[in-house]
Image (tube, rainbow, N blue to C red; front, side, top):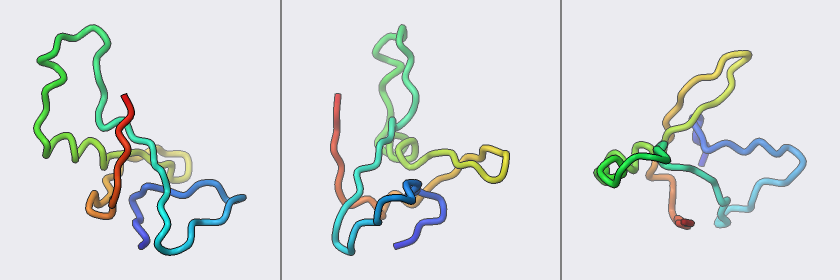
Length: 80
């Protein structure tokens, strides 16, 4: 399924996965402060999902913010 706002497939030398296969996509799900207390890390599930679906892309020589539809995500890997 094509999603014009991402996540994007940028490696043109590799074949895209076959239907039914998955692509691991890295996201940081919002920025975090290195020296902030725990209260700065508390977020709602809605805001967390919104941050995970946010990104940027380059259009010509401009960087623009984009949001992709988070319902296209079918699996997640959480690394910490």
